[in-house]
Amino acid sequence: MFDLVSLIKAIGYAGIFGIVFAESGLFFGFFLPGDSLLFTAGFLASQGFFDITILAFTAFFAAVLGDSVGYAFGYRVGPKIFTREDSLFFHKDHLERARVFYERHGGKTIVIARFMPFVRTFAPIVAGVGKMRYGTFLFYNIFGGIIWGIGITSLGYYLGNTIPNVDRYIIPIVLLIIFSSVLPPLYHLMKDKQQRKRIMDYFRKKISKV
Image (cartoon, one colour):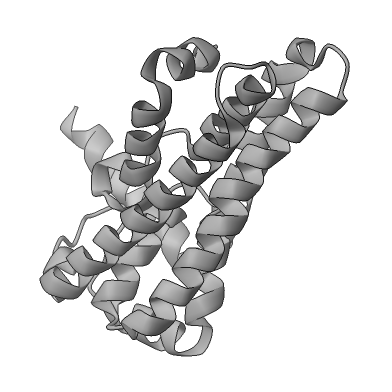
């Protein structure tokens, strides 16, 4: 298993800030380990490797700033990011869906997306493309940043201080976090017949080129 503990110890506050920032609003950050990273960093804070206050606010500010950058990118670039017909993540009709969806569920989407890998990277970008009002976006961005950035970090810290010998269970706990966070977006993606077909077509094209 990838040694997340050693990575976090090596990169420190600055590295944690960079990873959370990238995963929150930059295209290439969607594969980064946000939930597990924050929980493990919180656990390490309980063992004296970090100051929990500095760590929690580092995660919070990185999450809020990353989402804001993603929103600004989507707002400025607009429909241009939906032009790739064979893209695994985007399609032309996503823009109109995003506009309608954010009109109805904008705030809820920004908050819930924090806990969903892949989705949290693209949600602020799509919000910008859909021209969601920035004041509304910022409010839910901050709220989501608190319950995700501060909440998950504090959870790792609390369990590290509460459960005896919790370091023995850190790998199963992290695996459970990864599994539980990946499952909801995967379920919603695969239950949509159109999305399933689009994904299968995408991989068929890729396989045929090999």
